[in-house]
Amino acid sequence: MYLVLFLIFGGLCVAGALNLLFQRHPINSALSLIVVMSSLAVLYLLLGAEFLAAAQVIVYSGAIMVLFTFVIMLLNAGREERTHGSKAAYAIGIPGAAALLGALVYIFLSNGDLLGPTLLGASWVVPTVFSATLFRDLLLPFEVTSVLLLVAILGAVALARKEH
Amino acid sequence: MEVSFWFFVLISILKVIIVTGILLTAVAYTVLLERKVVGRIQNRWGPSRVGPFGLLQPLADGIKLFLKEDLMPTNVYKPLFIAAPIIALGCALISISMIPFGANIQYHGVDLFQISDVNIGLLVILGITSIGVYGVALSGWSSNNKYSLLGALRASAQVISYELALGLSLVGVILRTGSFRLRDIVDVQSTHGLLSWNFFGGWQFVAFFIYIMAAFAETNRTPFDLPEAESELTAGYHTEYSSMKFAMFFMAEYANMITVGCLATLLFFGGWCSPFGHIFQPYGGIWAAAIMPVFWFVLKVFCFLFLYIWVRGTLPRFRYDQLMGFGWKVLMPLAIANIIVTSFCLAYRAA
Amino acid sequence: MFSGSVVPVSWYLILSAILFSIGVAAFLIKRNIITVFMSIELMLNAVNLAFIVFAHRWHQVGGQIFVLFVMVVAAAEAAVGLAIIIAVFRARNTLNVDQVDLMKL
Image (cartoon, rainbow over the protein chains, first blue to last red):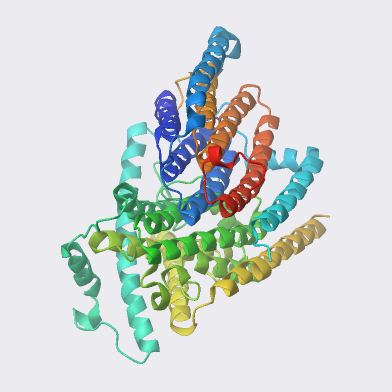
């Protein structure tokens, strides 16, 4: 059952990511990215990160990607045209990414026994444990991120507003 | 108790079918209720021809919508045009699966009054609601129509803004409970009837006010129905839709209303608990113990639906800048203040 | 009820590597600035998956909390990045990255 779920949602992730790569229209890419993110949320749940699974759906699929689609709709972005930059990128990008993938897969497979298995429900982090660590041990980083968010909001407002 | 896998699957499918059936019927009759009540508010009768008191009107509407021609406009982007209503309705229907309708009554180890008892049920509902906005956004974009696009832009901006206030308003309740599980949230409120509900005993009425405002905006209902403001945008994001695809948007809106009503009941008004506490619990035996909670739950949800319709019949629409200003400058600071006050009170009580 | 089968940690890591490589390729090949930005989000997500797998493997909450911080940073980044994209579109009237390579108008 666990294996089946992993294969289904892992497959959905890869299919969505490939679709992002191959689609020419930004809105199709955005939708395939939403598929990737939502399937990742299921994988997080399988790995026992239940709060993060919900946060993934709420923050990534429900807020960040809505912003992306919003901007695509607002700017009415059409199909992208291939220009001179993409030819060089094809020549370097595809082999580079493939080499990276090959190296990583080789390392992970050769150390597979060392890494061991994942078990369903073996390390289940309930939100109370999660928040206890976050708000007791890591209070300062947490507060710093709130400052970061404030700065980001101010920056976005300053950038996006029209100059008089 | 260990349950066999196939028994669990069978019972779950049965529960899903029954709940979906009840929900869709409820949606149909909420539409009728709305037409009746708004009619009375405006001093007219509302539908009264089909069946006694117009009670068969939803059936007639359903048949009409089924038999209408399903138009496909020429310049739409087809895959998304078809997917959008499915996303909207799907998300609206899925979130009901987390809602507990009655007391935790087990039959061979399976919960009878809830489809799935999830540990993070509240967050799952929030997540599914936030996915639902894609239905609106994509329908507007794929229609290739300026009214639809404007409606969709308004809807997505509105939903993102009000989602923040909505989420923050729930934090007070979660602080009081210490859990995201909806059954735990209700159990905390079950001790002294009316007095222990989060709205009264928990001092969460500010949170409730914020929640209900934000929920009105999330479901695109009056006074926040700018995405489909018929006087300026024809029909907003579903201008180009007809027949069953239109009906799916319609059903999604009402199903969302019902979910919001259920959630407000669970979070602020004690869910299925009776307002009289445990006074009447010894009477009536096992059947009353199973049925009465469901009765209270349905009654409370009905009150919320009535409130929705009442507001729609009474209030005029916001202007767009008023809508954004209200969400960001009033509701959000208020929600943050509520969190701070609630957490101070809880810390004081614990100390 | 659903236990029994086992998935190796390395499979999750390979999935993460695949997603990351696709993100790199999309970042290099795509010419639309919004899609380029989306491929960065894809790479971040791939890394998040690796963090959560390791958190699961060594029973540490820290990995999960790091993912939460990545989400916060991604949200901040999306807000500022999209604001920049809108500003660029206003100035240049294009979303193609090859046409916004000049330092001045």
